Image (cartoon, rainbow, N blue to C red; front, side):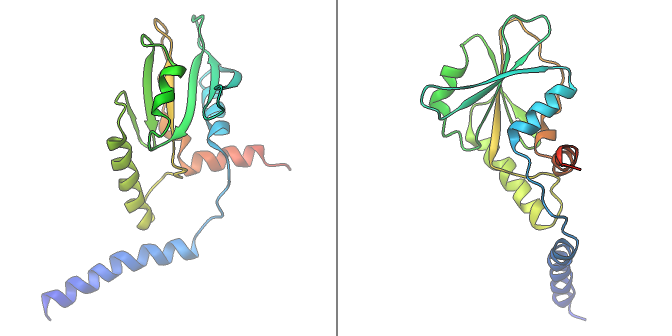
Length: 175
């Protein structure tokens, strides 16, 4: 048999089997927003939610959490993964504060849309094969830790994990 026939058959199987499985084994998606997910994640880490502040023009919101042994709060700011609000990041944090950007499976100090694009593309391709563990809502997090304050070790990828969001939705569901 011609090797190209075998390769073509394997390629078709590689593409169609996950698509068929995704169609027939799809679990209804639950809708838990990123703010609820972050609040639940940080509550499990022992960080108490304080309040949500809106910036003057309403384009960004900042969720504030109490950090142990720290006078200033931790800020978690959900924003577009395309860094559209980049100009507002300086309003959210002072120059001496530590900034982290979290998106899907990656956390970075780099303020660039290159790594978020790569992460988005990687997981979109995995999603086509039903292999991505994330629910991508095209939002990333800007995490601002005040100077001289320590942020506990947090697995930020849980914010986008489909199973984690589903578990939060099930615990919040009435009944």
